[in-house]
Length: 45
Image (cartoon, rainbow, N blue to C red; front, side, top):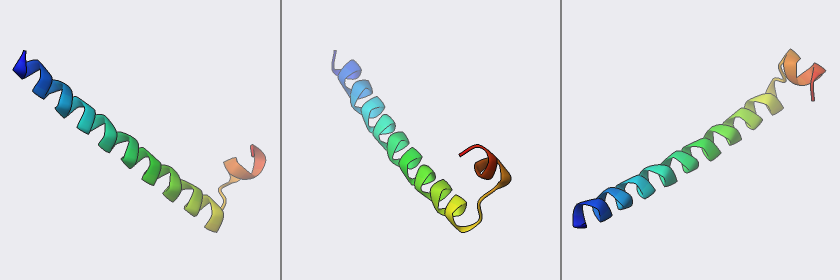
């Protein structure tokens, strides 16, 4: 029981880190598109 709870906490922490990382990556992507729009973003907004 206790081991399972520890695993749940670890999984929750991992998923939080993952979402935070995705947010940062998305922001960077928007930033780069803003600076130098690629042809894809030009033709398919």
